[in-house]
Image (cartoon, rainbow, N blue to C red; front, side, top):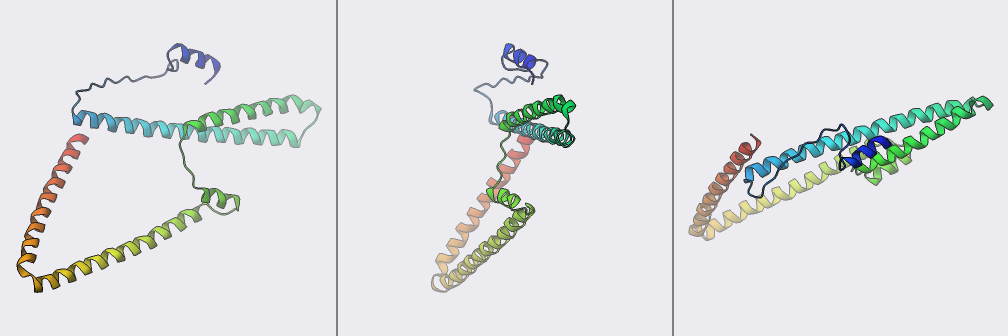
Length: 199
């Protein structure tokens, strides 16, 4: 945004000149379906804004790399006549770095320090992804083993309880079945509401 756009933006209350503005009205008596739809629309707009911000940063990085390449060519073949182009390219580099910093402030990207350390060590950042995936698989197997152990213990306890207290175990199974049926009905109602909201 150049200075004329900044001035126009300030004059229009923060809206860039020539920009598209969508105004929405929210009332306090909106139904849950309307407020959910508004929330979903806001989330979609937020994702689009984040993608656009990231695209702008990527484009700025590419421009900076182009300016650096031009600067290196100018420096490698430097003579007295190329002093003015060298100064112009230096100014372009400073402006583009400033633009990149400004655009980067709009992006909220969190990069784990381990990835930066791998890049500093000259290694492939994909190693971090592979290691994290392998760690997740190992933890998943441990958790699955624990869940299977609890299921086995529950089954064994029910068998032992059934031998000692058959009436109480039957009553427990009836309560459990009724509870499962209620949970299933609540789950189905939830799915119907979600589908209705999405429509």
